[in-house]
Length: 83
Image 1 (cartoon, rainbow, N blue to C red):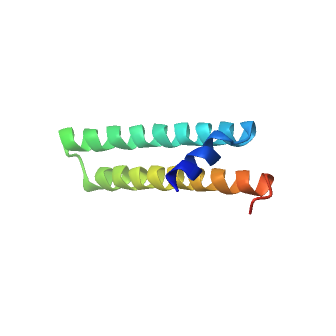
Image 2: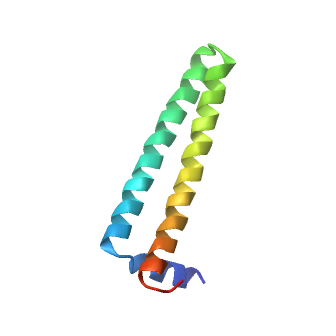
């Protein structure tokens, strides 16, 4: 099953691959921002709201990353009339 998923990933169309790559870069940037916010909270413990902002941003980046991956596979399947 993993080989089939990897084979589908290698056969993505260029536009789908480009959107997936840029989306994952965006999610990585959000993740780095949230990590820096949480690191700031750890060093200076200013207020709990900074912690909640960091955790929420981290969760958002993970969820968006997973959605980009799933939507990439679905869109490629729709374009190739597999789904």
